[in-house]
Length: 317
Ligand code: COA
Image 1 (cartoon, rainbow, N blue to C red):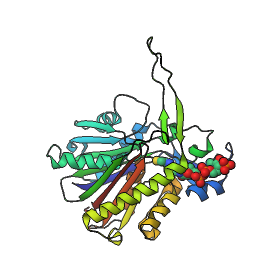
Image 2: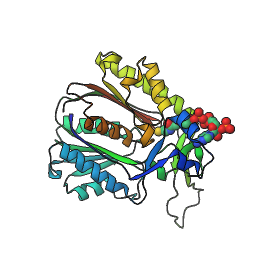
Image 3: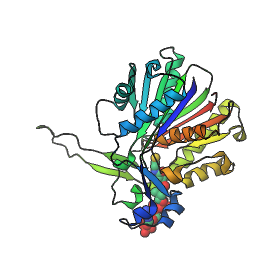
Image 4: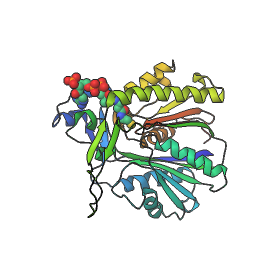
Protein backbone atom coordinates (compact mmCIF):
# COMPACT_ATOMS: atom_id res chain seq x y z
CA UNK A 1 0.00 0.00 0.00
CA UNK A 2 0.98 3.64 -0.11
CA UNK A 3 -0.22 6.79 1.67
CA UNK A 4 -2.04 9.16 -0.67
CA UNK A 5 -3.54 11.69 1.75
CA UNK A 6 -3.18 12.97 5.31
CA UNK A 7 -5.21 15.20 7.63
CA UNK A 8 -5.39 16.34 11.23
CA UNK A 9 -7.56 18.23 13.69
CA UNK A 10 -6.69 19.76 17.04
CA UNK A 11 -8.97 21.09 19.77
CA UNK A 12 -9.11 24.89 19.99
CA UNK A 13 -8.09 25.26 23.65
CA UNK A 14 -4.37 25.75 24.27
CA UNK A 15 -3.27 25.09 27.85
CA UNK A 16 0.19 26.36 28.77
CA UNK A 17 2.37 25.18 31.62
CA UNK A 18 1.72 28.53 33.33
CA UNK A 19 -2.01 27.75 33.29
CA UNK A 20 -1.29 24.41 35.03
CA UNK A 21 0.80 26.19 37.66
CA UNK A 22 -2.42 27.97 38.73
CA UNK A 23 -3.94 24.80 40.23
CA UNK A 24 -1.12 22.21 40.43
CA UNK A 25 2.03 22.01 42.53
CA UNK A 26 4.21 22.13 39.41
CA UNK A 27 6.32 24.56 37.41
CA UNK A 28 7.00 25.39 33.78
CA UNK A 29 10.67 24.63 34.50
CA UNK A 30 9.95 21.10 35.79
CA UNK A 31 7.60 20.23 32.94
CA UNK A 32 9.91 21.57 30.21
CA UNK A 33 13.04 19.95 31.66
CA UNK A 34 11.45 16.52 32.25
CA UNK A 35 9.18 16.33 29.20
CA UNK A 36 9.91 19.10 26.68
CA UNK A 37 6.22 20.07 26.76
CA UNK A 38 5.34 23.80 26.89
CA UNK A 39 1.66 23.60 25.98
CA UNK A 40 -0.98 21.14 24.87
CA UNK A 41 -4.37 21.35 23.11
CA UNK A 42 -7.31 20.10 25.13
CA UNK A 43 -10.87 19.15 24.30
CA UNK A 44 -13.36 21.54 25.90
CA UNK A 45 -16.70 21.74 24.09
CA UNK A 46 -15.66 19.67 21.05
CA UNK A 47 -16.54 16.01 20.76
CA UNK A 48 -13.76 13.64 19.75
CA UNK A 49 -15.81 12.39 16.80
CA UNK A 50 -15.91 15.96 15.42
CA UNK A 51 -12.11 16.11 15.40
CA UNK A 52 -12.00 12.62 13.88
CA UNK A 53 -14.40 13.63 11.10
CA UNK A 54 -12.46 16.82 10.34
CA UNK A 55 -9.12 14.95 10.11
CA UNK A 56 -10.72 12.24 7.95
CA UNK A 57 -12.29 14.67 5.47
CA UNK A 58 -8.98 16.54 5.13
CA UNK A 59 -7.14 13.27 4.44
CA UNK A 60 -9.73 12.17 1.87
CA UNK A 61 -9.58 15.56 0.15
CA UNK A 62 -5.77 15.47 0.15
CA UNK A 63 -5.99 12.02 -1.48
CA UNK A 64 -8.16 13.47 -4.25
CA UNK A 65 -10.99 11.11 -3.30
CA UNK A 66 -14.58 11.39 -2.09
CA UNK A 67 -15.92 9.64 1.04
CA UNK A 68 -17.84 7.19 -1.19
CA UNK A 69 -14.47 5.96 -2.56
CA UNK A 70 -13.39 4.73 0.89
CA UNK A 71 -14.07 1.01 1.21
CA UNK A 72 -12.79 0.33 4.75
CA UNK A 73 -12.13 2.42 7.86
CA UNK A 74 -9.76 1.50 10.68
CA UNK A 75 -9.77 3.80 13.71
CA UNK A 76 -7.24 3.63 16.51
CA UNK A 77 -8.85 4.82 19.73
CA UNK A 78 -8.46 4.12 23.45
CA UNK A 79 -11.41 6.06 24.91
CA UNK A 80 -14.21 8.31 23.74
CA UNK A 81 -17.67 9.01 25.09
CA UNK A 82 -19.15 6.00 23.32
CA UNK A 83 -18.38 2.46 24.45
CA UNK A 84 -20.49 1.39 21.48
CA UNK A 85 -20.92 1.94 18.57
CA UNK A 86 -17.31 2.20 17.49
CA UNK A 87 -15.76 5.56 16.68
CA UNK A 88 -15.02 4.33 13.15
CA UNK A 89 -18.73 3.65 12.67
CA UNK A 90 -19.67 7.12 13.92
CA UNK A 91 -17.11 8.69 11.56
CA UNK A 92 -18.30 6.53 8.64
CA UNK A 93 -21.82 7.93 8.92
CA UNK A 94 -20.71 11.51 9.51
CA UNK A 95 -18.46 11.65 6.45
CA UNK A 96 -20.99 9.87 4.24
CA UNK A 97 -19.00 6.70 3.55
CA UNK A 98 -20.78 3.37 3.18
CA UNK A 99 -18.02 0.87 3.99
CA UNK A 100 -17.27 -1.60 6.78
CA UNK A 101 -15.25 -0.22 9.66
CA UNK A 102 -13.44 -1.30 12.79
CA UNK A 103 -11.80 0.24 15.87
CA UNK A 104 -8.52 -0.98 17.30
CA UNK A 105 -7.21 -0.29 20.78
CA UNK A 106 -3.47 -0.83 21.02
CA UNK A 107 -2.97 2.27 23.20
CA UNK A 108 -0.42 4.72 21.80
CA UNK A 109 0.92 2.17 19.28
CA UNK A 110 -2.52 1.90 17.65
CA UNK A 111 -1.93 4.02 14.55
CA UNK A 112 1.02 1.89 13.43
CA UNK A 113 -0.93 -1.31 14.15
CA UNK A 114 -3.83 0.12 12.13
CA UNK A 115 -1.54 0.91 9.18
CA UNK A 116 -0.27 -2.66 9.32
CA UNK A 117 -3.83 -4.01 9.28
CA UNK A 118 -4.62 -1.78 6.31
CA UNK A 119 -1.59 -3.13 4.45
CA UNK A 120 -2.80 -6.72 5.07
CA UNK A 121 -6.30 -5.90 3.86
CA UNK A 122 -5.02 -4.27 0.69
CA UNK A 123 -2.57 -7.12 0.04
CA UNK A 124 -5.31 -9.73 0.26
CA UNK A 125 -7.43 -7.72 -2.18
CA UNK A 126 -10.29 -7.02 0.24
CA UNK A 127 -10.07 -3.22 0.03
CA UNK A 128 -8.69 -0.57 -2.29
CA UNK A 129 -8.90 2.79 -0.45
CA UNK A 130 -8.70 2.63 3.34
CA UNK A 131 -9.11 5.49 5.81
CA UNK A 132 -6.73 4.90 8.72
CA UNK A 133 -7.53 7.19 11.59
CA UNK A 134 -6.26 7.80 15.14
CA UNK A 135 -8.44 9.90 17.42
CA UNK A 136 -7.66 10.27 21.09
CA UNK A 137 -8.64 12.20 24.19
CA UNK A 138 -6.19 10.92 26.83
CA UNK A 139 -6.81 14.06 28.90
CA UNK A 140 -10.11 12.41 29.93
CA UNK A 141 -8.29 9.40 31.41
CA UNK A 142 -6.07 11.18 33.93
CA UNK A 143 -6.65 12.55 37.40
CA UNK A 144 -6.26 16.32 37.04
CA UNK A 145 -4.92 16.58 40.58
CA UNK A 146 -2.10 14.12 39.74
CA UNK A 147 0.77 16.31 38.52
CA UNK A 148 2.79 13.28 37.43
CA UNK A 149 0.32 12.38 34.65
CA UNK A 150 -2.03 15.24 33.77
CA UNK A 151 0.72 17.60 32.55
CA UNK A 152 1.76 15.09 29.88
CA UNK A 153 -1.28 14.76 27.65
CA UNK A 154 -3.16 16.52 24.86
CA UNK A 155 -6.03 15.58 22.52
CA UNK A 156 -6.33 15.36 18.74
CA UNK A 157 -7.08 13.31 15.64
CA UNK A 158 -4.90 12.42 12.65
CA UNK A 159 -5.79 10.44 9.54
CA UNK A 160 -4.32 9.03 6.36
CA UNK A 161 -5.83 7.46 3.25
CA UNK A 162 -3.95 4.48 1.83
CA UNK A 163 -4.39 2.65 -1.43
CA UNK A 164 -2.66 -0.05 -3.49
CA UNK A 165 0.99 0.79 -4.09
CA UNK A 166 4.58 0.23 -3.07
CA UNK A 167 5.02 2.58 -0.10
CA UNK A 168 4.80 0.24 2.92
CA UNK A 169 8.12 -1.54 3.15
CA UNK A 170 7.98 -3.46 6.41
CA UNK A 171 6.94 -3.48 10.04
CA UNK A 172 7.66 -4.83 13.51
CA UNK A 173 4.85 -5.12 16.04
CA UNK A 174 5.18 -6.38 19.61
CA UNK A 175 3.20 -6.75 22.81
CA UNK A 176 4.32 -7.67 26.31
CA UNK A 177 1.64 -7.94 28.98
CA UNK A 178 2.67 -5.42 31.69
CA UNK A 179 -0.62 -4.13 33.06
CA UNK A 180 0.92 -2.94 36.34
CA UNK A 181 2.99 -0.17 34.75
CA UNK A 182 0.25 1.72 32.90
CA UNK A 183 -3.50 1.27 33.02
CA UNK A 184 -6.87 2.99 33.30
CA UNK A 185 -9.97 1.19 34.58
CA UNK A 186 -13.63 2.11 34.53
CA UNK A 187 -16.49 0.41 36.42
CA UNK A 188 -19.19 -1.04 34.22
CA UNK A 189 -22.89 -0.85 35.09
CA UNK A 190 -23.85 -2.82 38.19
CA UNK A 191 -25.97 -5.97 37.91
CA UNK A 192 -27.83 -7.81 40.68
CA UNK A 193 -25.26 -10.62 40.38
CA UNK A 194 -21.87 -8.90 40.55
CA UNK A 195 -20.07 -9.89 43.73
CA UNK A 196 -16.44 -9.12 42.81
CA UNK A 197 -14.80 -5.86 43.78
CA UNK A 198 -14.43 -3.57 40.76
CA UNK A 199 -12.16 -0.61 40.41
CA UNK A 200 -12.73 2.69 38.69
CA UNK A 201 -9.47 4.57 38.76
CA UNK A 202 -7.86 7.27 36.65
CA UNK A 203 -4.75 6.48 34.68
CA UNK A 204 -1.97 4.93 36.73
CA UNK A 205 1.50 5.16 35.29
CA UNK A 206 4.91 4.16 36.56
CA UNK A 207 6.65 6.90 34.59
CA UNK A 208 10.22 5.70 35.07
CA UNK A 209 9.40 2.13 34.05
CA UNK A 210 7.47 3.31 30.99
CA UNK A 211 10.33 5.63 30.05
CA UNK A 212 12.99 2.89 30.20
CA UNK A 213 10.83 0.29 28.43
CA UNK A 214 9.89 2.75 25.70
CA UNK A 215 13.49 3.67 24.93
CA UNK A 216 14.70 0.07 25.02
CA UNK A 217 11.94 -1.45 22.87
CA UNK A 218 11.65 1.42 20.37
CA UNK A 219 15.42 1.40 19.72
CA UNK A 220 15.39 -2.41 19.44
CA UNK A 221 12.51 -2.45 16.94
CA UNK A 222 13.86 0.38 14.79
CA UNK A 223 17.30 -1.26 14.56
CA UNK A 224 15.74 -4.64 13.75
CA UNK A 225 13.54 -3.18 11.01
CA UNK A 226 16.48 -1.34 9.45
CA UNK A 227 18.45 -4.60 9.50
CA UNK A 228 15.49 -6.47 7.91
CA UNK A 229 15.48 -3.96 5.06
CA UNK A 230 19.28 -3.67 4.70
CA UNK A 231 19.22 0.06 5.52
CA UNK A 232 21.60 2.22 7.55
CA UNK A 233 20.16 4.68 10.12
CA UNK A 234 21.18 7.61 7.87
CA UNK A 235 19.10 6.21 4.97
CA UNK A 236 15.97 7.34 6.79
CA UNK A 237 14.85 10.94 6.21
CA UNK A 238 12.75 11.20 9.36
CA UNK A 239 12.05 9.06 12.41
CA UNK A 240 8.48 10.00 13.29
CA UNK A 241 8.26 8.74 16.86
CA UNK A 242 5.39 8.70 19.31
CA UNK A 243 5.40 12.17 20.87
CA UNK A 244 5.31 11.19 24.55
CA UNK A 245 8.32 12.97 25.95
CA UNK A 246 11.18 14.88 24.32
CA UNK A 247 13.68 13.04 26.53
CA UNK A 248 12.44 9.68 25.20
CA UNK A 249 12.88 10.95 21.62
CA UNK A 250 16.38 12.22 22.47
CA UNK A 251 17.30 8.91 24.12
CA UNK A 252 16.22 6.94 21.02
CA UNK A 253 18.21 9.35 18.80
CA UNK A 254 21.19 8.71 21.07
CA UNK A 255 20.79 4.92 20.77
CA UNK A 256 20.64 5.30 16.99
CA UNK A 257 23.73 7.56 17.07
CA UNK A 258 21.84 10.16 15.03
CA UNK A 259 21.41 13.87 15.64
CA UNK A 260 18.00 15.32 16.41
CA UNK A 261 17.53 16.66 12.84
CA UNK A 262 16.31 13.12 11.97
CA UNK A 263 13.66 13.29 14.72
CA UNK A 264 10.95 15.89 14.02
CA UNK A 265 8.76 16.66 17.01
CA UNK A 266 5.64 18.53 18.05
CA UNK A 267 5.38 17.26 21.64
CA UNK A 268 6.35 20.74 22.81
CA UNK A 269 3.01 22.21 21.66
CA UNK A 270 0.76 19.11 21.40
CA UNK A 271 1.72 17.03 24.46
CA UNK A 272 1.23 13.27 24.29
CA UNK A 273 -1.84 12.69 22.12
CA UNK A 274 -1.64 8.89 22.43
CA UNK A 275 -1.98 7.03 19.12
CA UNK A 276 -2.88 10.25 17.29
CA UNK A 277 0.63 11.67 17.79
CA UNK A 278 2.37 9.93 14.88
CA UNK A 279 -0.52 10.71 12.52
CA UNK A 280 -0.59 14.36 13.62
CA UNK A 281 3.13 14.79 13.08
CA UNK A 282 3.05 13.04 9.70
CA UNK A 283 0.34 15.44 8.49
CA UNK A 284 2.21 18.42 9.90
CA UNK A 285 5.38 17.46 8.01
CA UNK A 286 3.47 16.75 4.80
CA UNK A 287 1.55 20.03 4.85
CA UNK A 288 4.73 21.96 5.67
CA UNK A 289 6.28 20.54 2.47
CA UNK A 290 8.97 18.65 4.37
CA UNK A 291 8.36 15.25 2.74
CA UNK A 292 9.71 14.55 -0.75
CA UNK A 293 8.82 11.67 -3.04
CA UNK A 294 11.19 8.77 -2.29
CA UNK A 295 11.93 9.79 1.32
CA UNK A 296 12.11 6.83 3.66
CA UNK A 297 10.31 7.34 6.95
CA UNK A 298 10.24 5.27 10.12
CA UNK A 299 7.02 5.54 12.14
CA UNK A 300 7.39 4.14 15.65
CA UNK A 301 5.17 4.22 18.72
CA UNK A 302 4.85 2.51 22.12
CA UNK A 303 2.03 2.38 24.59
CA UNK A 304 0.18 0.66 27.40
CA UNK A 305 0.14 -3.08 27.16
CA UNK A 306 3.15 -2.76 26.73
CA UNK A 307 2.80 -2.50 22.95
CA UNK A 308 5.13 -1.27 20.23
CA UNK A 309 4.62 -0.70 16.53
CA UNK A 310 7.29 0.35 14.04
CA UNK A 311 6.99 0.55 10.27
CA UNK A 312 9.06 1.73 7.31
CA UNK A 313 7.36 3.85 4.69
CA UNK A 314 8.51 5.27 1.42
CA UNK A 315 6.80 8.61 0.77
CA UNK A 316 5.20 8.29 -2.64
CA UNK A 317 2.93 11.31 -2.77
N1 COA B 1 5.78 18.94 38.57
C1 COA B 1 6.69 18.95 39.55
N2 COA B 1 7.16 17.84 40.13
C2 COA B 1 6.68 16.66 39.66
C3 COA B 1 5.74 16.59 38.65
C4 COA B 1 5.28 17.79 38.09
N3 COA B 1 4.38 17.83 37.09
N4 COA B 1 5.47 15.28 38.42
C5 COA B 1 6.21 14.57 39.26
N5 COA B 1 6.95 15.40 40.01
C6 COA B 1 7.92 15.07 41.06
C7 COA B 1 7.66 13.71 41.68
O1 COA B 1 6.67 13.78 42.67
C8 COA B 1 9.02 13.38 42.23
O2 COA B 1 9.17 14.06 43.44
P1 COA B 1 9.95 13.37 44.69
O3 COA B 1 11.36 13.16 44.18
O4 COA B 1 9.83 14.41 45.75
O5 COA B 1 9.23 12.11 44.95
C9 COA B 1 9.98 14.01 41.23
O6 COA B 1 9.21 14.96 40.50
C10 COA B 1 10.59 13.01 40.28
O7 COA B 1 9.56 12.19 39.76
P2 COA B 1 9.85 11.08 38.71
O8 COA B 1 8.56 10.39 38.37
O9 COA B 1 10.99 10.22 39.16
O10 COA B 1 10.36 11.98 37.48
P3 COA B 1 10.87 11.56 36.08
O11 COA B 1 12.12 12.23 35.78
O12 COA B 1 10.81 10.06 35.87
O13 COA B 1 9.79 12.22 35.09
C11 COA B 1 7.90 11.57 33.76
C12 COA B 1 8.43 11.81 35.18
C13 COA B 1 6.46 11.08 33.88
C14 COA B 1 7.95 12.88 33.01
C15 COA B 1 8.80 10.54 33.05
O14 COA B 1 9.00 9.42 33.89
C16 COA B 1 8.19 10.07 31.77
O15 COA B 1 8.02 10.83 30.84
N6 COA B 1 7.90 8.77 31.66
C17 COA B 1 7.29 8.23 30.45
C18 COA B 1 5.84 8.60 30.42
C19 COA B 1 5.20 8.29 29.12
O16 COA B 1 5.80 8.39 28.09
N7 COA B 1 3.94 7.90 29.19
C20 COA B 1 3.14 7.67 28.06
C21 COA B 1 3.19 6.27 27.62
S1 COA B 1 2.32 6.11 26.14
